[in-house]
Length: 182
Image 1 (cartoon, rainbow, N blue to C red):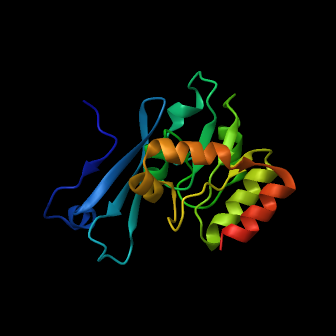
Image 2 (cartoon, helix red, strand yellow):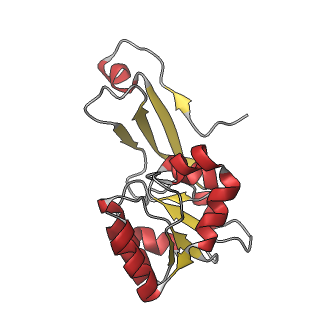
Image 3 (cartoon, rainbow, N blue to C red):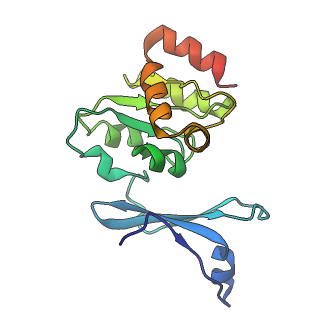
């Protein structure tokens, strides 16, 4: 079957060595590979992520297929691949929510819920999501820094319920973002 990621194998060229020991995460748009990212698995490299663009004209998101899923479930939007993967969401790949990414995500008819990482840089895209008319959720995930860590610690059902129970918009959301994303 198809896997959402691959492991780079040892090679001899300089290019091979740059990818060796990285988890390779492919990004597709309409079944076409547009981007892939290698994440350092051992934590010893200066650059944690290595990116390869195959289609420089595409907006890079993980989970494009979720945009067009016909369901009443909300569309969860997060920063990173692992967060999106565990909750069947969209990853903006980093913490920059650009107008181009907003335009692509708004093509979905689903209710949008942005879930920021709980650190300083998580507040900026969350505030942009609010200004785009999306809801924001800051789930009760204790000391976990993101959805993936909470998923590992508490399980999927708890994480999804906490996302839904803590979804808000407007002034209430802005206060929570500025208070909790620090």
